[in-house]
Structure formats: C-alpha cells, structure tokens
Length: 623
Image (tube, rainbow, N blue to C red):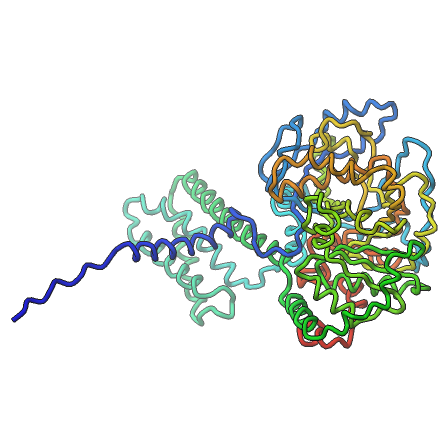
C-alpha cells in the first residue's frame, strides 16, 4: 500500500495579495469621501480656487495714489481647500490649489477711470418695469450667529451652503425629535446617577430606557415608522428622567456631559455636511448621464452617416472678415446649441452670422454631427478640433488641451465691519485657450466671445459698431474687485492698483489690436512667470493673474446692462432684472443643464433648447 503524499501547502502570497486589494478597495471610497484625492469624474473642468479678500471700498476712494498703504493693511489671504492661510506678503506662485468661481455681478460699483475713456455704448433694452437699479430680492435679516455660521460654511464648502439653505427641510417628525431630546437628557444624567449609592434601581431603569430609545431610533427615522407602543416608552422615560432630576447630583458633571454630547452631535452633523458637500460637488462637476448618452449617440451616428460632413456650402463664410463672427469654447453640445439658438433667435439678420465652436477631440464628432443636422436660420456653424489645429498650425505652443473659461470663487469681507456678511462673488476670466484665438482665426478682425453658459436675449449686432479705440477686449468691468487686492497673486509687476477686474461671458475682441499689442506673446511671458509646476492645478490657477495683467489698460468697458451674472449660484436675482438684461450668464456651479441648477432660472435656458430632435427624446433630454 503506497503512502499518500502529504498535501501541498497552500501559498499564502496570493491570499495576502487578494486581502490587500480588498482592503485598498475599501480605503479608496473613504479617501474620496474625506477629500483626500480629487474627484476623477469631473467633466466641466473649471477649477475651484477660493480667494478671501477684504472689502475694497476704502481703497477705491483713494484719489492721491496713496492706496498702497491701505492695500497693505487690507492684504488678502488665499485659502487652499478652505483651511490653510498664506502669508499676505508671500508671492502667490505657490498658490496652485483647487480653484473655482465665477461671479455674479451685483449692480457693480461706479467705474473710476484713471484717464479719459470712451463711454460705454448703451445696450438696446426694452424694460418691462422700472426696477430702480436693484436687481436683488430683499434679503432676510440675520442675527450675528447666523451670519458667522453662513460665513464659516461658505469658506469651507462654497456654493454648497447656498444650495443647502434653499433646500433645507424642517424636521416635521415631532415624536422622533422628542425621543432624541429625551435620549440626550438621559445620557447626560446617567453617569452622575450611576455614582450615587442606593440608586441602583434608578440606574438600571435609566440604562434600560436609554437602550430601548436607541433601539427604536436605529429602526425608525420618521414618525410613521415608530411602533404603536411608543407613547408608553415616552411616558416611561419621562418618569425616569423626573426621578433622576430629583436626585442631588453635581450639576457640573451633568453640564459637562451635556456639552460632550453636544460636541459629538455637532461633529456628526459636520461629518454629514461634508459628505453632502462632496456629493453636491460631484453632482455639479459631473456630466449628466443623459448628456453623455447624447454625445455617444451623436458620435456613433457621425461615423455611420458621412453625408452631413461632406456639406461644405458654408465653408467660404468662415473666413470673411466683414461677417459677424462669434467664438464659443465648449465641450457641451446642448450648452453650445442654446448659446447659438438664443443668439440667432434674437438677431434681426443672420445671413452674415458665423459661429466658431472650439471643442476637444472627444466631443468634436458629436458637435459636428449635431450642427450638421440642425440649422439655425441662415447662420453658419464652424466646429473646430482645438487640439488638432494647435498641433497642425501652432506646434510651437505647448498648450494643446482645451480649457474652458475659468471660474474663481472670491470672498470679500469688510475689515471695518467684521460682523457684516462676507460677500461671495464668482469671477470668470479667459482660460489659456482664449489666448490662441487670434492665431486660430488669422483672417478675422473682430469677434464676440461667448461663454457656453450664456443665454442671449437681445440682438447683439450693435457690438460690431462699437469703436473701442486702442482697446482690445470689450468686457463688463467688475469693480467689486481691484488689482490692488491681489498683490499676493499678481506679484511685483507694475500695474494700476485701482484697476478693476473684468468678466468673461460676453466679450468683444478686436483681433487686429490684439496682434498689434502682442497680447499672445505677453501671455506666454506671464505664463512662464506664474506657472512654476507642470501640474494642471498650477496651470489653471495662473489663469486669473495672467488674464488680469495681460489685458491691463486694454479693457473697453461695456454697458453693465449687457449681461446679468450669477444665475448659477445666486437665488436672490429678481425676475424683472433677468427679463431686462440683454444676456444671462449662468456663472457658478449650478448650471442650468444640471439637476442641481436653480429651478427659477432654468426656464430662461430651456426655452432655447432644440425641440423635436430624435436623440433628445432617446436620451431623455426633453424634460
């Protein structure tokens, strides 16, 4: 009889490797939950930088050029991720953290011109009613505690706080609330009662009631889920608490326990708020499933039917300098189509209107097919693959990725009145890709650049009749923010401290003056100065100082009524002000095509959606 060989020992290596993988798979979601790593499903790639600034009112009134001292006193601090401060006198080259923001322009401050400039051309608007220059709904009066809480929340979580306030649900389950209150009181008395001699029965009863309440609350979160005998338990707990309060205990111990429970509850609430803020940010920066469906269907259909792409009837119009050319940077088919549809719908003549859409390689074919199968009156649409044209025609430029208009969230506080509510504005500026428009469209002389979150409500043809003189960029100025407040961002370069910031959204660009002033060359010099790392965060954080410095003294102020901003974050804009504006700018996180968009403002965007489109219905985009 042969002896059976001993069983081979199992190797422990593979088992350990599998366990390690399982452990890592559990850690990754937790890491994302605590914001240890950036979200990876971001498609609307606007950075999230937070800038905390003092109020500029006192500095703006300096007439003798002595504002430098005031500015030094009110030096801004840059917040990385909302919790770390930087020395105000330190150069901001190290400021490359997450960056957001686009602003709403509240009725801007009066522009203080340093030298005579051409007056802005009035916007042809037909107001419905007199809004008395006030575009904002009356705000509720808040006490000091509420102001501080709102300020702290916005500094840490940004626009999520505005959204959460609007969607706050009042707790209607009174019985559940009473159970929780009883549980807190019982827990605060239990340690002190347990130390008393002769109170063993009360201690056991208190402990039993606490356990029963915990069990009920673990199974029920609303009154409808509570068991039928809950009233008996509530009465029993009331009697036990009354007996506990009748005992002679050290009030300091009870107070200490209550505070401990309060702090634990606050920590738990903050943890859940952090979870909710993360999901909010994931929602506003992720492409909706229906939009992804539309892009995929259009891309597949493009390669299935090449006939639409062969239609070159409008190609000759793309480079005619005398036509009215609009430029849109977008990765969103529907957003770009709404901009175009709203523009042509409000234009008297569209025969000489041309739209140039700069998009990335991923969305290029979807854009081509969409605008090939949909016409917008007599206008022509030119879809450009940004990366391809940079590689073919501008190989010397290393910036081949398409960047959308950059948005920055700016906090402005008043140092003279610190209890005053911190003002949060979204400032939108040109991205790096904007600076190559004159090189891409070499035959054109003047263009109007529109952000893809803009809705046009008036005829913009008058913009081509504006004589901007020697200026390059016609923009709405935002004098709520001055360059003097950004010295730690802008460095030691020579610039006017009282110069206003400006807004992207609707911009008139004189390409001939751009080339004369070598704006693109100056941009490349500034990029080398402000970009000290090759990571994307550093590149995008540099967009704010580069845009402000590259166009200093080259901004032509457009009429403030040309556009109203803030429809992507501000709930307080009056509807009359929206109707009276020539264009609407949905700057901020809550874009109109997102489920998290502000419902009151979505209707102005949705009315320009393309209807009776097969792919819209198949991807459930009609709603």
